[in-house]
Length: 43
Image (cartoon, rainbow, N blue to C red; front, side):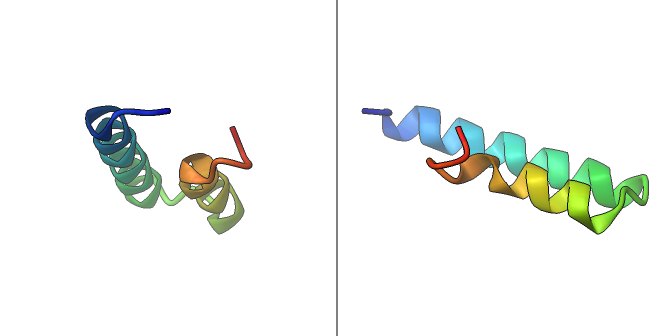
């Protein structure tokens, strides 16, 4: 079971990644894959 702090860190990481993807005009499909990193089924 993940601690709250670990989950919060992962959320921040995914948020930063999605911001980077938008900054560099990465295709939307790739952005969707990154945003799915918070989905437990994806891990």
